[in-house]
Length: 351
Image (cartoon, rainbow, N blue to C red; front, side, top):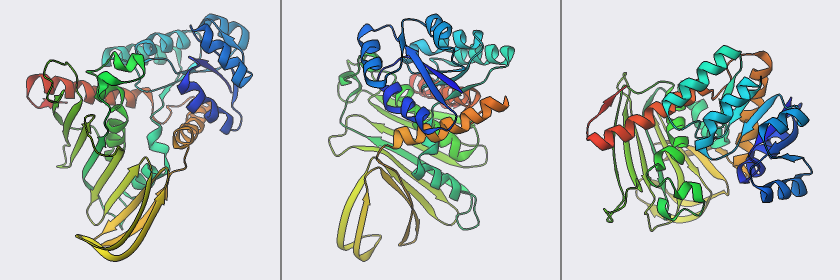
């Protein structure tokens, strides 16, 4: 399939172009961008043509699928324009800005018999995929409680990327969208309710969710929590996951681990343990026993995007709903909007 790119910046070059190259039968045919500097460097670095508009890309490169890799506020219109031109769409996260925009895109896709997927590539990273595959097995049992946390010392108002810095009160939306999608993917259900609180830390003059706490309660008694702390002065923990099942606890640490422990530590076996996983590691815990399940490659972003893209393109060819579909991405937006509404009102929001 012929793949074109809307936006030829970092996301397209770091994730999507390597992903296209890794999928048999996929061919990158060029991209468009409003920045002349980006267009020039794209062609120089990739050897692919760069155009000034979607119309020019459609006319000269004739793509069948559009990868949307621009800032989030442009996603909805680009998806609508691509669908109207007869293309399927693979959109970078976050899908669109609101549930209402998601409904517009979904309605247009249904009317045109087109499909839209969203790059929630965490699902296909080996460590999170290994956790998902264990849930519900006889050895692990059913999922009971899930925690995901992210700790880093980068306040949202200090973001080096300008469009992210312009969204200081959208941390759960822009970065936390991966965490919400991962939770829904693991639980295979929508929560019955959402309760959330957020804070800008000690500086109450700022309107920013630098710290975010979200609790999801599911109809069958399962619970899940998300913690985001962008004001943490300790070492960065990009994504830490604990999924407690009936018989085991499943763990994943994203962002790299290199640890040598000698001796004793509470709640761990004595002795020597070496952990080395530059891209992150997943493991199973039963009492004091541990078993490694998977490790991420160093380029886990491009790897996960490539694995997801392969499944998405197969669904596009067959005319069926792809994995990580726009419909599922709409559910993620529903949870995020409910969390912000709960933080404003101080009340649990029912879904």
